[in-house]
Image (cartoon, rainbow, N blue to C red; front, top):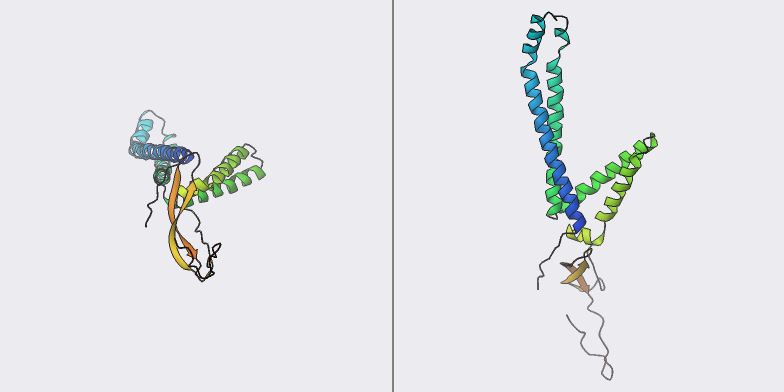
Length: 208
């Protein structure tokens, strides 16, 4: 009989997912503002130079490199927009229990740990705080209940290699909450037979 998995999102995953979504929204807003600023700066470059010339500050006109500023703002805005989209996808993926969101999260925090270690080695000791936070989040993501929510449970096998394969339920307890029920292969041996008290040795083995 097929048992449908019942998943309940751990509270910590909810918090991390919401923070990721908020970061994504902030990135999108920042990217939009930077792109808008790039457009505005680019359109006022020539009028600003003409205005300075009309006031007699012709020597300042060559210093007004608004086109370069606009290009830099456009690049920063595009990067911020892309980062915002990334965190938005990561946040919704985590809230929906997508396995790829767990994998991406592990990669992100591993890179964050490496960066924090480098920063501390270079003398930036406040980076220790970020290092501790990243280590704590990775430890949390590897908790059994969290891994089960993202579908990262390990397969369980029992019995001898010569046995047949059946699908049976396994129960994994989530952190402070209900259970996750999943189907995993169980190996059943064909060789052992049960010897009942007072009976002969040819009794059939108990079946599931």
